[in-house]
Length: 120
Image (cartoon, rainbow, N blue to C red):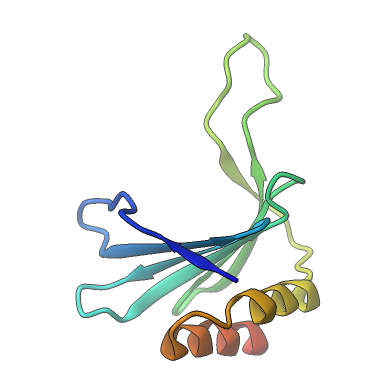
């Protein structure tokens, strides 16, 4: 089940961010000042080639692999970045969210479920 991480660092001028985690799966939600969802990101396969599926209103979904910055020359680790990855495993992501998102408040759970089902 997804558990909320408390005291998440907030970015100035970017609304409010909520972060939930479970084994190998995370959900980050961005909210505006009124509490409306401005988007969300589902991260899966954590520790095994992490991927991120991000949804924003008016833009739809973007699917990325997380490049951890480990493969480079020069000896120092670089910051992780998102790299485009078009193959979205919709059934797996939907199943993982359904199994782990049951403890979320109804409005948030229904919003993410609806977006994943509509795939847009």
